[in-house]
Length: 496
Image 1 (cartoon, rainbow, N blue to C red):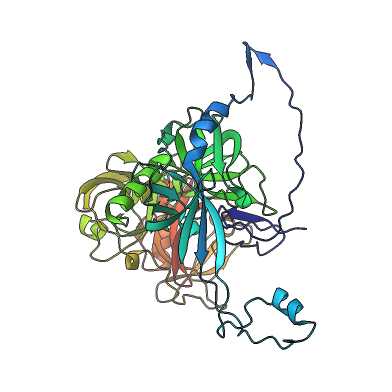
Image 2: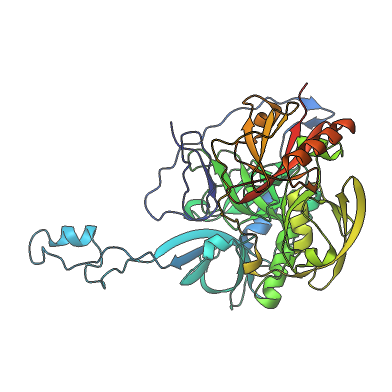
């Protein structure tokens, strides 16, 4: 069985660890070697007239493509290769095998350890009359030189204005005359699943290529902290990275960035950075050469159905505070571990990405209302946002917190299938395999820190909090545990 992969529209492949594991990578690097081009397979679609319209039929895009295509460029980036084994002189010099050696081992006289630059290919597009071009960070990252190739074959050297690895965006600039016109940003927030779209880029370095399809989904996350991708079914392959995604009006609603692929080729699942996000990042890069983000100073986790039940909030929503950085804006505002952040700056927080983006987009120094749920009561705090520094990114702590394999049980909680021990706090002594606690993921040796948003000092306090939740007719109990130095909240439902 072939390994499954997600291929970003740019760099190398990251294969799955097993036959059924999916990984993420970039799709923009086009190999300069020979490429096997699979024959196209055409499938006739059934056509059914409904109110004089044909379901699933795309509009004729020829006029839109003709107008937009000259503004889309191929990007060729030369990147220093990793130092490899030392090169050496041709041992067959002067013999009939000299030419064979030179053909298969180029640059035999190169300095020891030096290898030829890696040459990669991606896509980009003009956004203004000053020669600024948008592309992906992974297309030009660590590039020694960057060249753009216009649709008519004209080549121009480009400078990197700035990059933002967190959103995989970059801005280039060329100083030349008679440049193509700028493309217009569209409203990506208005894009709905089922809307017609088309993409233009240079897959495999072939030059401008047009593909079309529909928006498949919105708000996709594939591992990044600031992910909010538009998912499309338009064929996108390596080399399309940084190319524009257009709506039916010919406006740019996304920047193509990654694909999902079991084989490395297109399978109809592509991901595009929404224009509303891309435009704000690009504007910052053009103005300052960098991107400034707001910082709150909390580590957060998502809310699942069991956690929501333990908090008595109905549907799963919000962001649960796992940790608060000392002297951070969150600490100064009074946020505590176990708080459920429900709104930020008046915006509803449905999941982690909502809070992450809302905080990041808040200008440094501005104050925002933070609506939280604590102890079953809602309250509003005020947080003044600081600047995010790289060193302030949440780091996983790796201190050991393993329990003994032979713990003596002090308290049993039959309703959850737990046995607890008092050992410098509270440690889980045993978990029933198919008990509610076992199914929820609790393990022997886990240290219990909080129950229902309140700290617990001993096993009796845990049982008391569980009993109280049952009297309050909660459907689940919220535990905060520590395992191998990592803290997490777990919702444990009551058994039947």
